[in-house]
Amino acid sequence: MAKLLLTVPEAVEALSISRAKLYQLMDSGAVPYLHIDRSRRIPLVGLETYIADQLAKENAA
View 1 (cartoon, rainbow, N blue to C red):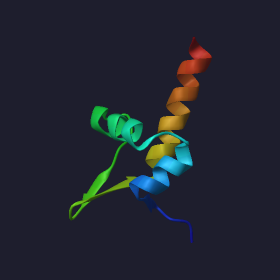
View 2 (tube, helix red, strand yellow; view 1 turned 45 degrees about the horizontal axis):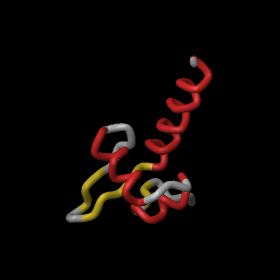
View 3 (cartoon, helix red, strand yellow; view 1 turned 90 degrees about the vertical axis):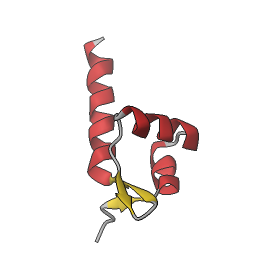
View 4 (cartoon, rainbow, N blue to C red; view 1 turned 30 degrees about the vertical axis):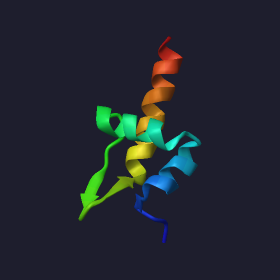
């Protein structure tokens, strides 16, 4: 079964961006996340939605 939630390092690797950039995206609301205790977890579907939104913006320009 595929993971539904990713850790910050896993999401960074999946998006090929820096850790700081991922935190910026999460803090701005562009990439959703959950708090589980003191850890942040990023839903896989949230990353897919972020990518789809970025592609739509690129195609609209």
